[in-house]
Amino acid sequence: MSSSRKLRSTQWFGAASKDGFIHRSWMKNQGHPPESFDGRPVIGICNTWSELTPCNGHFRALAEHIKRGVYDAGGLPLEFPVMSTGEALVKPTAMLFRNLMSMDVEETIRANPVDGVVFMTGCDKTAVGPLMGAASCNLPMIVVPGGPMLNGKFRGCDIGSGTSVWQFSEEVRAGSMTLEEFMAAEEGMSRSAGHCNTMGTASTMACMAEALGLTLPGAAAIPAVDARRNLAARLAGRRIVEMVHEDLTPKVILTRAAFENAVRALGAIGGSTNAVVHLLAIAGRIETPLTLEDFDSWGREVPTLLNLQPAGQFLMEEFYYAGGLPGVLRRLLEARRLNPAAVTVNGATLAANSAAAPIHNDEVIRPWHQPLVHEGGIAVLHGNLAPRGAILKPAAATPALLQHRGRVIAFESIEDYKQRIDDPALDVDESCVLVLKNCGPVAYPGMAEVGNMGLPRKLLERGVRDMVRISDARMSGTAYGTVVLHTAPEAAAGGPLALVQTGDVIELDVAHRRLHLEVSDEELARRRQHWQPVLAEQRGYARLYVDHVLQADRGVDFDFLVGCRGAEVIRESH
Image 1 (cartoon, one colour):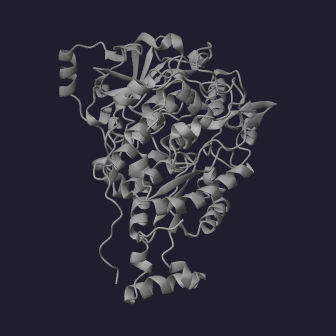
Image 2 (tube, rainbow, N blue to C red; image 1 turned 90 degrees about the vertical axis):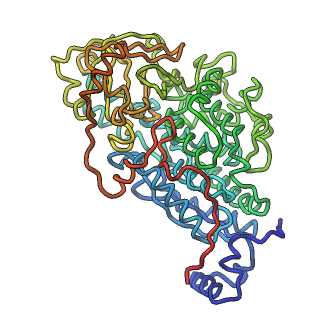
Image 3 (tube, helix red, strand yellow; image 1 turned 120 degrees about the horizontal axis):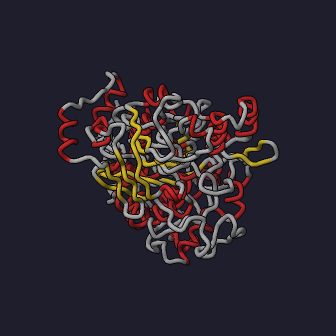
């Protein structure tokens, strides 16, 4: 396939001039023959490989398969590195650097002679930051997810990434599992290349990329070590060359219909709550209207169909063998919950791609009338405690706690929580509501995954395994519990959460989407007069972050990055 349209890369390589000489001659030191610069599509391969990001540790080999596909289709592949953040290692939280990663990607694309880009995504923020940067540039793009690792194993049973860690850790604190047993489980948790094998944020965002139409059909769930992952990468390399000729850009794909499908898929798979801030950020970059309320209205009528940890039983291996995301999308299509207008990277609609998708295991991908949870999705809560919203994942919660009224135990910071939670003198019982403040975007900084607070040891020892917990933080997509997250505005920004005190009473009513602090307006006003934000002095990038980050209801992006700037560069470098 060819195009009469002059490609962007010819602005670098097509000129018979001093500048053209410079651009071509230095590239030739890598062995590229002259015909490499004859106007064929130049494809950037954005590789988030890093040995500090173990989920993406296999990406160097995977990139070679993408390159073969680009060559197959007549393009010139040029691989480039970008910042990579791994959830397992980065402190204080990888979320602090998501926006920085997006800036790296955006500016690298814009500054260089690429006509289209393949994004290699894996661990949580590496599956989001690059998409945000790409949306800001609006060049043809396709996503190649790195794939989940194989099922973890411990004593003959499957164990899931993250989910089993939270479970085992609480059992150790409860005294029902020894520390030696806990350490023994470590060896079998992560036993192959790939990202988390539960429906954590990495798996969720791979599914979101597919539901948005940014991957080839079925790409999200293929295990990292399955040979079909390599084939999918090669096919994506071929397809991006065609997309450049077709000028099939994110503006065409990332429409409101695409986000509607993604939000409904999020509910059907029981996906991570982190998808909310990530999808809001991507939509903001591509200038597609999307609000917190859309998550509630689109997702409320969707049951959770996927029986996968942390909400269910199985892991990503079984999901792929059962049919992967196309199977879930087929269920949505048959229930008329898929918008037929959304186009994908292969040129067909998401509905057309999913209409005949095979489903091999109804226990994993449940029928519509036999769901894992009847009301899935993300519940968006409002009330005097969350004027701009807070969220909860019903599929991961205890049903009996979805309507609850309890006495508050308030923690002013994560340090305060860690110091007091296991104090035998803490006046707490299972009916209490744990409230954690100052863990949002500005305060932490970066909105860490600490919202799924571990329960008090003395309650764990009595067999309690869930309580209502409320914070302005996030939680890992692999976690579970009746956890209210992303409370906006956050405490450090003057949100009502800052005014909550131990002994107050909070009512949670998920059915009516209500989160209410039973304190009078007059008392709250009195408390506000005495309130002062407690923020650590920041320098460098952290200072930039604190000064410009938006709140959770707007996707936690930087205020100056919202919108699509395009990829045009007018001035030459010499």
